[in-house]
Length: 281
Ligand SMILES: [Zn+2]
Image (cartoon, rainbow, N blue to C red; front, top):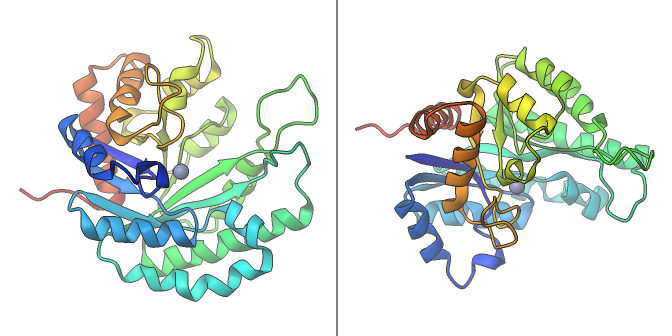
């Protein structure tokens, strides 16, 4: 029994076989799926999917890229966005956060950061109003030093500073990529969990991510695929899908020296509690 806590099956890559993908997840032991909103359109599709399928729940959120794309105009759509919150299948706000990585090699400006922060904080206030947990998206800018290929932790620090003002909300750091020292800061907070996706299977055995994973108690970990992207080994390069969350579970069990069954059971309970989706038998 597994819960896929971060899927984008509303993505057009699933248009031709969505029903089969969902059925396959069930047959692989994926009991529930949380489909994530990452913009206005995808939040609308996420709600529609959850309304259609019993075992799919949804989140709604405006991704930092959304604010980068639409600038000031993003804020005109907030009312429309908030109106989606009437769905009974809505279990979280997200993915929201800060993304300082600019793909063309440019460096994010102060104004762009401010815009992202405004959008992020507005949605945190909304989550507080609705008493819903928050799914965080965090990507740092690439350091200017060419040899330092790892992302910088500027966005991590900024997110943490902001969310410390919301002590009553629960947070999950989705597809977590923070370093060890930062992990320890997050671990000190009771209202913060971590989720890991298929990219943990790409690393060499001595990678820092495994130290990070060993440091985090299994009671603070949830599983995800972030499909259709980042398919875990041995499916790397293929389209990712919720069924593949089992490979993420296997990797985490291996790194943390746990039986797969135990890792699955505990991460499932974590997700049920975090999203409030416990099945009552
Ligand atoms: Zn995502």
